[in-house]
Image 1: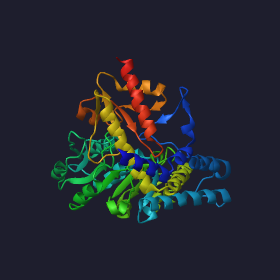
Image 2: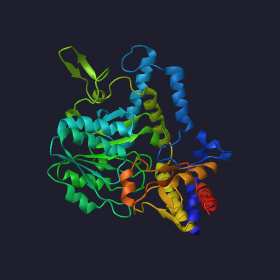
Image 3: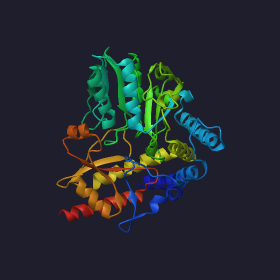
Image 4: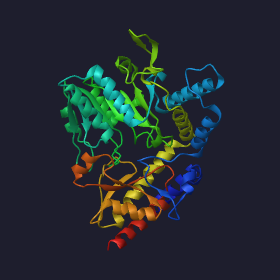
Length: 419
């Protein structure tokens, strides 16, 4: 216990968690006259003041469309927009700027691949492989594609701890498999999947791999060249950036073979009534006026993360997660954690015997604690574990042990209310 306490003190001092918390103005908010304790980071993260200020600055001083104007404001907006692309490239260690496509978010990125890659490579009888722990956004687009093409969706099973059964994964790969689409970190179980190994096994059969990094990008160092994935997708708002913006990373050789996802301005080089010639990458997939301020804000969020000691920060999150899991397991005899993978991040989905998750969430809200309740857009996961819903606590870089202790004491009040 002494070592754990010393480790916690050293870690928090090195990282200056107090200073990090001061960077997020919303954490000063009172909820029902109590300080906000925010444990809904898997749904969306809060924004540091640097990001908020950058968004305001854009509208106050720069607001203009990009890639089209010769005037100063347009040139400035274009420069900042493209600078953000460079920041993303370095943040995930992509090879080329042409491999970084800006989208509306993870869901939009997956739909882009399903539509475009699907038109280019998927036909009747082909198979697409996903897992039992996927978010609905990594299920439904593939179902739509299968309904359209006559392809089949195959599902990798998971064990009782919420881990992929890798032997079954290898068995499901076949000459008909045209794509593996897999989540990096489960948003409802917290499971960290062995995505590098998954890609390696698929590539032995020349099968491309998409990784849903919505929960992976903010909890780990992502190196797409090291992972050797063919696509990696994530949302800005999960990375302490604005909502409505995301990224699709794709290997250039695949993106070049894929037709445009949408038609409109900026994705063309020449238009006549007889034929349209498409623009080069990455602009071929960025039709119309994009979320300019969102992209610029995402670039600022990346600057913010790069200014932190991310290696120690991720270690701090891991220790905080272990502390939270230990407290929850040992404090409540009627509490069951859904998802107990050996490799896991700071997500605790739990149920209390005889108490509905929505009631848990409501009572905790009156204590100033924000958690998520429901099926978390992973209904197949709920079906797999035989529960209709869970209460979910998810950690971010600004959470503390004191907040976890407060949450534990507040859950005791839930027991008191329900006898």
